[in-house]
Image (tube, rainbow, N blue to C red; front, top):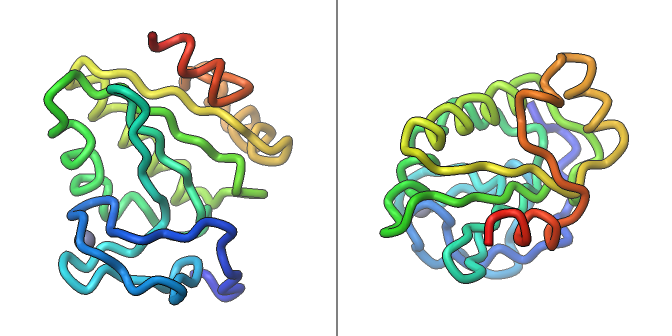
Length: 151
Ligand SMILES: [Zn+2]
C-alpha cells in the first residue's frame, strides 16, 4: 500500500488506458483513479513516432492487478507494440511492481512487441539485479538510447 501520497512531478491529464480526461491538479501518486475505467494511475503515456513511452510515476501501486488492461491498451496500437518504460521518476519499486513489469514483458513479447526499460535509479537497478532480472529485461541508460535501439 502507498501511504506516502507524494505529489508527482508529472501532470497526468488523461487516463493512459482509456484516454478519459482526468481532473488536472488532482494527481496524487497511487491515489488518483480514472472515473471511467477505474484504473489507478501509475503512469502517463507519450507517443514518439510508433513508440509508446510510459513514464512510471508510482513504483508502489500493485500494477500486476491491472496489467491485462494496460498491456491490451499498448498492444492495441496498429503497429507492433514498441514500449519504453521510463523509470526515472521512481526511487524504488515494490515487488508487486516488479511482478507487473514481468507480466507486461511477457504479454508484449507474446504480441511480438518489444519492451525496453530506461532511466533506472541505482536502487531500482539493484532491486532488479538482486532478483536476477537485469538480464531478463532489455535495459538502456537513457530514453534516447532506447529510442535509437527501436528505430
Ligand atoms: Zn481510464
